Each structure stands twice: as structure tokens, then as C-alpha cells.
Length: 109
Image 1 (cartoon, helix red, strand yellow):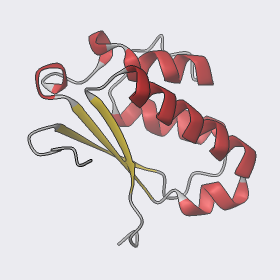
Image 2 (cartoon, one colour; image 1 turned 90 degrees about the horizontal axis):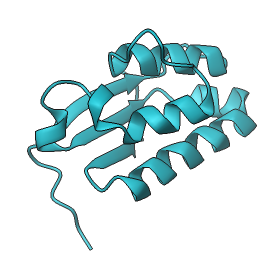
Image 3 (cartoon, helix red, strand yellow; image 1 turned 180 degrees about the vertical axis):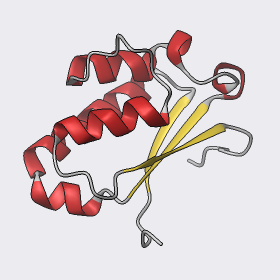
């Protein structure tokens, strides 16, 4: 099955230099322009990814494509946290068909 991703609102989540959960949450908050009340925990991340009211302007109409790049060093340094992050990304995408989270496998340059 293929999914047409053309036309979705694109957000790049760059994790280059992230070494812990706090850094991940800060990058997510910045990339998605989340409100100040974003709780910077796994439940808040899941809620934000599935809540259209906090998505960037234009993403609700188009659907949201979040491309995660530079994630490999974080995944290696904090494998348990990374597994949890992947679970959150997967579950959010399953619950919200207009959301796609993709892991970039290429280099970071």
C-alpha cells in the first residue's frame, strides 16, 4: 500500500545534537511551534501530535508530515527513550491518519 504524501504540510524535526529526553522535547516544541503549556513529557507529546488545534497553521487542511532527521546518535545514546519516542510517533500516526512521522535514514548534511 502506498500513501500519497504530496501536498502535506512538512515539518522537519532535527535531532542533531540531542542527547536526552529534555532536548528531544525542546526540539519538538520548537519544530511544531507548540504552545508554552506543552508539558514536555511523553503523554503531552502524544496529545500534541494528535491534537489538530496545536498543529502549525495550514497543517490541519493539508495533513502533517513530520520528518525526523539526525535521530541516530540519540537513539544510540538513549535506546530506551528512543523506543518510547518511536512508540509515541507510531501510536499518534495510527490514531490520526492525517499525521505521518517519517525517519530520515540519510546523512545529516
